[in-house]
Image 1 (cartoon, rainbow, N blue to C red):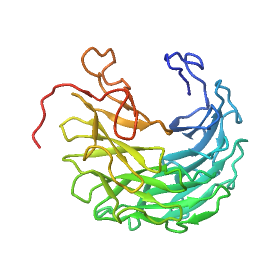
Image 2 (image 1 turned 120 degrees about the vertical axis):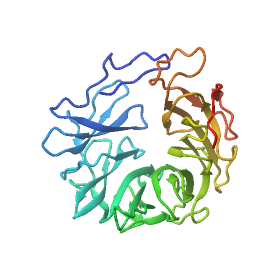
Image 3 (image 1 turned 180 degrees about the horizontal axis):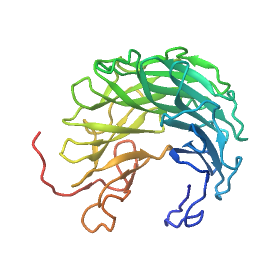
Image 4 (image 1 turned 45 degrees about the vertical axis):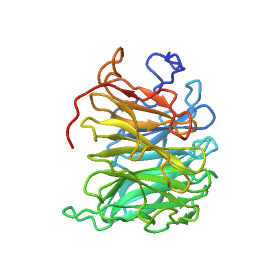
Length: 361
């Protein structure tokens, strides 16, 4: 189901939303992105047949279904691996990236679905890379000219007793041609420890900024790297530190700052509970805000799933318990938001802090 809400929270597409598929079997792991013309494109893993596959559907701004009923199948090959990343192609369509089990390993597959809804890169999609180790967490960003840059984490050896994940990237043009990173991908970071769960955003200049969870220091920290339009990294070889505070920094989310930099948000356990922090990076990799990040919410209880609106000015949402004294939110279900007013860290919705007992580090 899919629904839309105006600023006052009244559903626009009926009380129960619009059905994207009503076949027998489960519809799981949905992902959604704007089509840039008022509607949206949704992909999901569909179990209508014995073996699952990814499908896509486009919805108009009035809730109308614009592609064939039941959605468009992205590839003939089946996939029971959950993660599918989605980005607009800038022309009313989308580019989707997912993993499946073909070619004797784990393959990274891409498909372009244009405005018309007819897949463009073959009936089975285009295989970008096949890993015979362990690979996952693909993420994708626009190259601003109809193509995409894909990033993923991978341990090429795949030894379950000694996993060592690094980050790789690849640039695909709008016609499916691989510009750089063909084969095994261009390295983004291969520092000590694991580099995992990458997130990516366009730098609006043909390159991208990537952030990830990193264990080089023994815990879970966050680092970032800018990849230039020709595939070389622009910042320090191992990336720049977004936050190396005590305890865990996890689950990064990234958005553009509108001027070739990026803003990263994450959940952070330096205080004992999981809070929401953010940091801004300029085009040279310098942090703009407080060292180790600016606290957006510091309250008793655990928060998760930080997610940015994909366009500037930035707006962030997350899942968490009540939002402090006087809140009418339902514990565990509220979705507070904050909007960035400028690149210096001023927020239109001020960060909230309430007293609590803190653990010693």
